[in-house]
Amino acid sequence: MSNRERIARAAEEARLTELEKAAKKSAKATTGSATKRAPKVVRMKIVWEVSSGGGKALKTFAYADKAAAEAEMAALTKSTGRAHSFRAAKVPMD
Image 1: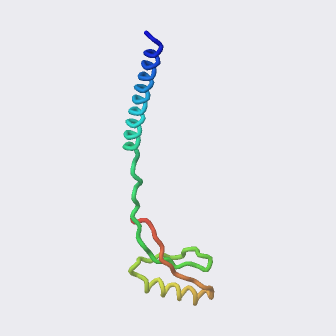
Image 2: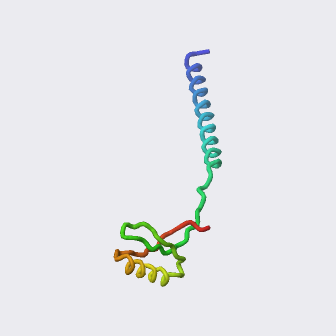
Image 3: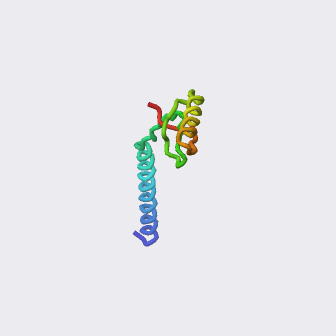
């Protein structure tokens, strides 16, 4: 066997091993992504929170009870003499 034939044979073997490595790598990449789980979706709802001046939530009301939340805020502000507020907040659904 001549030197030229040996070099051609070695080059062909190197090319085939590179193709095999690339095929294994692509097969591993496709199976690896299939095993990942999708993140769990948490459903949220909006509620009204009556909070103190520092932002601590004191009472929580359903979204439909906005008037009750405003009335509670006014009553707490009047009874304690300190400012209270209400805000919309997102909480996980039960």
